[in-house]
Length: 454
Image (cartoon, rainbow, N blue to C red):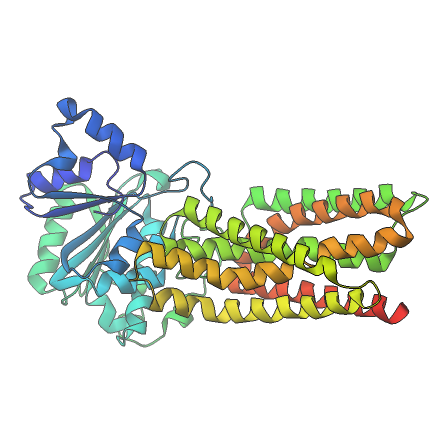
């Protein structure tokens, strides 16, 4: 059971006759509260046959060597599993990579069962499962022999809870009949059952079309989610409205800042604005995806945030301190070189980090933390040099411009946060990191021009 909450699903599994249950819950406070009230709930998390684990569900399955008769996710919506965690981390348990992991941890007749809030989410889960099995070597038609999707009938689409089932072995005629009858008895209607109700996925069941050819409707975003863009609950084909408002607001603030600064007597030059603005945008565009990706490696969103920030900021401080010994004459040249180093390291992480995460996911927690720090520290070291030394050089000629540049860097960093979230939805975390790398290329170019001018 992934997302065990306060133990309701554990109780239902026990009542259904399960005698060996692993209950995985990411929120330690929920487990503590449930155990604290054991007199009321019967000590559900410590019942015979129940093993309770405080962990992120995706990470637990990936590191497990067990196989399961059922992997069960019931209305899991962990948008904020612990205080301070990232709001973009809620749906890694529904990505294509996650479905592949679940599939490979099922027993020969095991089942993955997902209860979703409504039919659209259930359909997206099914499509993501099909994509996962495509990557396992099964065609869409063959994959659908293993799948079923049912929904509770309701006039309100947001109340039409759906159930998606993926069975390791193909569903037999008897399996389909049992699902149909049990669903009807519970007030559910089938959306997809092999050889019985196939209209929803017409063309896929016979492999007449591919999954990419099937996904042509534009009313909803039902594309399979991936670790690079894991926003399973974002069914809107455009950016969510709050994010649109945030982007527009950030753009307005940037424009207002420039207008207010334009009348200043000692305002910075255009080249200086490009330099410090590139640093503000680039840093945050690289940092946010690194936090999200590190979550998959360390298995906890709060720790991912702490580890990435600590590694980048502390190593950046060391880099800034180390560069203090460099002479003024060639400092712009050194800054340009370090900006190129940041670009190169960002590209390496953008393409190499997922493979590292996948290959080393079974290591101990301490080793994973150490590897994360070692991976990020060279990047942080290089990122810590341009800003402090840029201020150092500008201050020699126009000290009055420094407050404006501090503010400009801060404003672009805030705008970068909104842009990073938007890019993650548009082009994925890797795409966001690549845009950040381009920002540092621009910083390198601005530095080199400054060096050439002396």
